[in-house]
Length: 180
Length: 395
Image 1 (tube, rainbow over the protein chains, first blue to last red):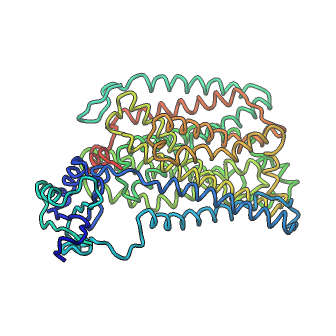
Image 2: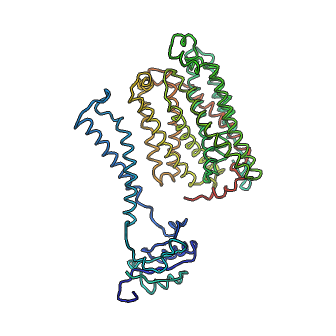
Image 3: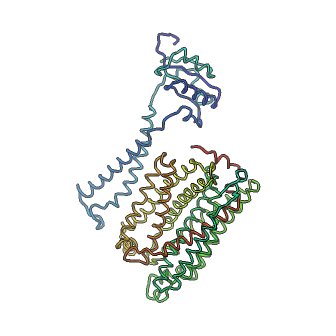
């Protein structure tokens, strides 16, 4: 694996604790890197601000999904009850919009719920069976007691030696070059 | 208004209380003119009074719900506004006094109190075991005793905490809150059956109490938002109640807007589907003449807070929060008016100047009493260990 001709995926460094990771994330961002990520066993308060992550577009997409679902289900009820197979139920008018409300509400909630789950996975790039990060020796600690920052080679500023030195200078340990 | 930043006490409480007292007394005196008028004027006075009384009572009871929920969920974010809401809650004794005119007006308000009408009405005879003056009065006393006990006990323990924190105080507040929540749900429901639903004693809706509860919670959330912003503006709540807390209140407003709409629609939907005359008459009464306009407004009223409180950015905008909250407070009044007045003005909306004077009268006294409590002690629970955590909260 140490063959230099192989493609380099990025570089990963371990930090001592959540506070160090938070500070390091800020420095990485200030140094101008954009394709980097932090790995920790639990969410760290303030990390979004330190990485200056934009707000997720998920809510807006789900609003559109929900309104589309509402429109579709109202139309379905109208079309089946009043157009395709007109049927008078308990003397009510054919277009009894009141009766459409419970199904309209329930279906909108259902569509928004399933939509949130599926679109969240898509936005997160999941499901993904393999990630070059898994070649790292230490990364499994990120599910237990390790705090890591990885910088990808796709980043415009990436240079395998400079980036490595930079991570070292801001307090990173156990720095690894990842191939894949 | 000025505040001592170390003790969190008001050093100068301003003219707020005095102005409120003057407005309140003037409003009630003007309203009492109705006593000396003919039957029509007197009836109008009592109906206007009942509308306003219920408007302010639902805000006070909403405050009680907020405090009970605060203790039961062990909430941190709401510690900063706990004292403010407690002071709204402890106006219950004033509300009990302001309830007395309704006892005098029973004959004009509730036609099931007329013995000759009951004698010729089989349905009212069947209900007379519950709907009779003696039992009505006993229940009213019972409600106010329960509310007074819950409010008084929680408020006293809270003031005790200012002198020194003890874990036993937290235990006391939770011990009161758990059964208190159950009693609150029952008393609020039955009070709304007694005082609002029995205006039309033939009609019944089992969800009516929940409808009033949803409206009262929505009203207190809007009320606390507006009041806290006013106090922030005056420098009292500056750097204590922050946009993070308003954001939380906004989220709850969104939740209870949805809840209110859900309950209001459930009530309408079941009656619409079954289409039984004795039930649907109530909505038919509200579909006559200009009542139709009010009904349509009520039906679509929830869409505005639903949309304005949906987005994070708008929940963190002072302007949007104030406009939404004021809108909700006006909407709550229209809702109360829509519940009460069609029983008096059957052919359409007739606004009376009593509607305004009773509103200002009860509201003025409410604010005066509230301000007396609020300015007498620290404006936040200074003994609560999580106070600083609550002030610093960030989302």
